[in-house]
View 1 (cartoon, rainbow, N blue to C red):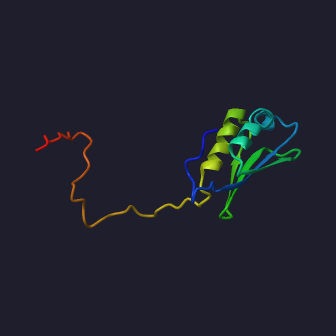
View 2: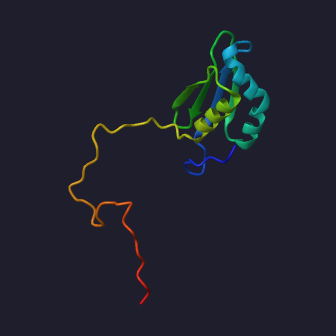
Length: 130
């Protein structure tokens, strides 16, 4: 579990990772495997993240990330492998917790770039030093 690339003020934004699963349900098989194999390694790699494991009968597994800013993000872990569960945990850890905002209209400028339009096929030939 590599170090996260998205930090604000030098701190991970994920405050708590909640893993909810069923102890006997087939859809929680990957989560149970992740808990027995990879959870300790994930917790050691991320000491600032509080990890809560909730065993709840007859419920599909869910990973929920609670962030410093108060937001929550939940990922459905039903019928996923242990590797996918580990990827979900890393994805929640690397996110900032902010809501995704979409722009309704494309951004249009009245002043095009002085450098001109980007052309990936244009060659850049360096000038010799004077």
